[in-house]
Length: 305
Image (cartoon, rainbow, N blue to C red; front, side):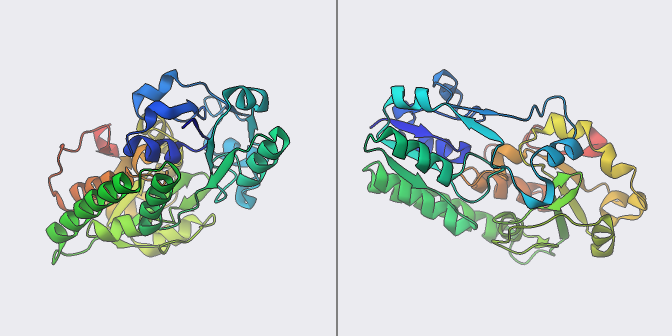
């Protein structure tokens, strides 16, 4: 089967099912596994986030309205040349990837009998359900069932290891300017890892918030995992928080529990690696060892940069 993935998380799902070799097209943001680097790219972004700051990026994509309908371009000519049997996309957020509506319109114009599968998980269970849905579409439901069972087993292991421990109060930040709390599956990741998630609930599509809300929440742990930013980029913008009023009064700051995490790998994308994100969080919140061990590239305190 010839697969085009228009969502980095979908590429992760395909790889989890052992079918990365069937990918014939991908987005410009698909970066895992490393082998997908050789797959043709069919999308591009209208916003150069390499030169813009968080506030400028937010303004460019529509800010609080999440109106990113023109944020991505889709190379329909290349898509036609690739002749996919299956296109994987999403309809959860137009800022995250090319929307299902735009992909459906493009495929309809090609009139080539291409199947379009939209993935829209909002919770951890939804992420695993997507793995099953992609497995069905690829004709490998048994493989999907095995992988889902393995991922669920890892989640149970973490939950067992943190059971009965005190639950630190945790705020997770998905964007630095404006401040945006992490929603969807991230609160569940925090809870599964033995924390108490603040400022958002499982499945929630969040909105920008004031700095005062963070101050009032008084988190014991502050997690920085901006959407699409690798850790090294996040570190360059931590000043957006550290210069805010009463920063040093936060319990998390006083105790040195402000962490930069690898958002794109383990928290922003609804793929199977969210389970690794739970393991990383159990290490951050409780020192629970993970296998393989958590590295500084996955989680690092800002005072260790």
